[in-house]
Amino acid sequence: AVIAGALAAQLVLTLPITTLVARGLGAPAAAAARHELPAPGSQPWLVARDPLLVYDIDLAAEIAAIEVRPLTAPPTGPLEPSLVDVRTPAGDLLGAAIPFDQNGQSARIDLAPQTLPRLELALAGGNVPLFFPAGAVVVVEAAPRSGLANGCIAAALMLLPTFVALAVACLCGAVAAPPTVLTVAFAVIFLLTVGGLGPGDSTLLALLRGDWLPSTGIFAASASSLAAGSVAMIAAMLLRRRLHR
Image: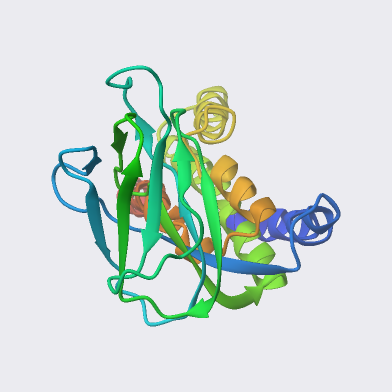
């Protein structure tokens, strides 16, 4: 009951920050779902000897933009930025050729909302080898999502470090003295917040960028922390019941 009350109090305090304050800091009123595409094959290089990569897009929704962010290797001669054509399987170009010559360089192509079952990246020139790991190509849905709902989801995700810290403290409290319990609780919450092991940093960044949180993979990344907290709570209840007997 104490843990539930603490989480409810934090939610009341966090909601205005992730909705009103975030909006004032530039978070858009509407969020957009972003989907990272897996790497196309085991060797997703775009080079002269292999100048084409094909992505299958398993998405029924309309797409409003394509974001491309490859990694680069040293050029094979005097630097000539590699030009990449983004096109449909029919060969229709989706914007002008994109030059890449820096590692992690990002480019965005805005489209008229449309469905794309497949996408092709073709090397049109240059000598900078481009590597496309998972997530190097992102498609952005056209349908807007509620920015207010996105803020509420962010506030709920912010509760995770507190839940894990209190759950572990509850487990330790069954057998340890208060100083030890406080030390463990502060250590866990420090690792999950300042230490960057929790979802806080990625959640805030996605919220301010206007990314629809359920589509970013943050939930999957947070599953291990949620599982750890749940296991600690179950173990605490079992241990306390055993001690009372």
